[in-house]
Image (cartoon, rainbow, N blue to C red):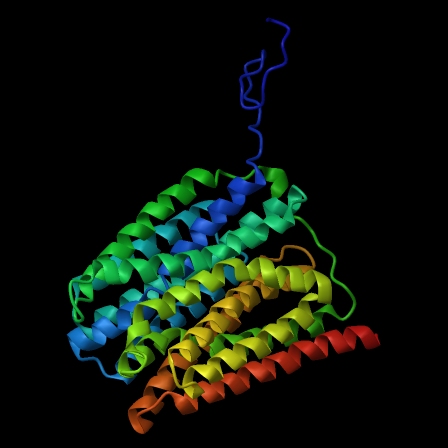
Length: 405
């Protein structure tokens, strides 16, 4: 009828376009999930299950393997610092989509070379893109969820890391034609990343102006608490990454554990996916700082168990403790950084991501060099567990300071 009110997204009587309705929080959360599955779950962590195939096919030593991993983490660190630069031009959504495309292309291109230098360049590029994905997806999706009053959907978004890990854990053995076929897995993982990126782009429409630039007020002592949180976040980056990088190699190298080679990384992914909801609940019940501290201790136990346990069930439990904590810690750390931020939280989220990137950049090379010297991951893994305990104490001190204030 002529007097009907035009629907949102329709053309009004005066010829002007009405703004489209915002997407449902579930759509935003799934777009974030797909983004993190590409940028982190596949783009970063596909290297872990592929690494044993690369060692067998290319005869890499562990220091070279660690260097390739660290190149990715150096890129992650640089990308996070770039995301902290407030003057980045253009629409953040377009930067996010470009970063997703680079993640997929750099992943697939790993199959096209056999030389160390191109590996380092590709992993660096993928790491930088992954950091942009983490920062921009967190900022865009969480801002829009907060604007809709539906922050709880963030748990779905951060489950994308575990989802991507689970996808890569299944794709790698499916694509490998033998124990030394490392190229097929890289090609398949790159193709999957591109497909998921396209889906994310379709779901994550351009934001409405009102959903951006929300201002938050910081609590008293927020600067001090944020500084300690950033340091603790960096320690967790170092603490988790040695096991996360080398656990598949640990399993393949031990005849007792070899039957679990294709299960251990799947276990990490399956426990990572729901962990954000679990630690989010703990953060609401205990406070984010206390939940973060407890998560660090649990993760430290898993890291230590990965080298101190003696059988398949021990390594699967270690994988479960790692997967069940590190993504949850990522999420509640970034959520708490938002709470401690005044104004646009993107810079603080980027600084947190950079601290994490710095810690995880050091870990693989450190562990690879020690392995080549000592013939074992025992010492670097135990030092990683100590770093996680230190992170727990540091974040617990934030909660104690807040209670005393």
